[in-house]
Image (cartoon, rainbow, N blue to C red; front, top):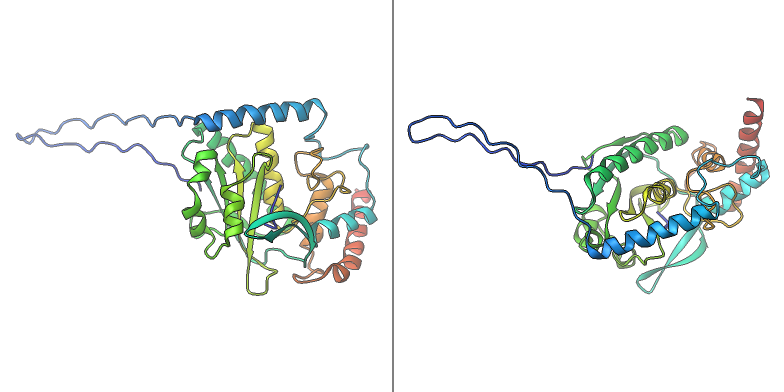
Length: 309
């Protein structure tokens, strides 16, 4: 689903009190209710499509929310191998001005600075959905902060991690704003967001400092048309991928970093991979060969600790 890797809303203005010619003060007018956003015809069609998709996945026992259990055991060796596949490879490669799905070897990349996260909603996203999504994103960001040790706070001031919840027409008109958020963004990344194909549920794009391994900024795009669970699933995967777990692997189970859609929300193994990624024994810029033996040691320690508990 992914590439490498305070919402504000208008308030109805209060009419100012006016003075009559005789200097008599008239009562202030009542606030004008803010009209409820209305889905476009395009978004209504997409919303119905994604509802059917969610229903079909649930009927197949997919998009699980249990985080894994006795039916999905994994060893420290499997954990370390999955970590290397997911953290040391990219899911997409730029090709001819577009992003093409192709796992390519990378280096270890992560945030080395506090994250100032902002959530922006498209004008057509319903107000109740905005409130629910903001609460979900805020709570999940706190969880990611606890797992990684990276300070994450919601801030509208110079955000470096922006989460966009946009419907179809909102996204089509978002190019200028996207260039503001990510100055210097290449055309392929622009097109990946603006021309997002229907079968791609969400996406995250990250930019890096001069060394190419320390996150500078990130933008995650969540389709507003998704039903609740599918939307929450996108929030979980894209925000975590934007922390540095940039790839997917068919061997990773239980994990949201697996395109089989078995799990919808961050799993126990995913949490452990985030712990490994931000362990101080690993450093940004490490290759897979350098990181793998250290990851095996950390994975063994983490699972031994869980067993002791």
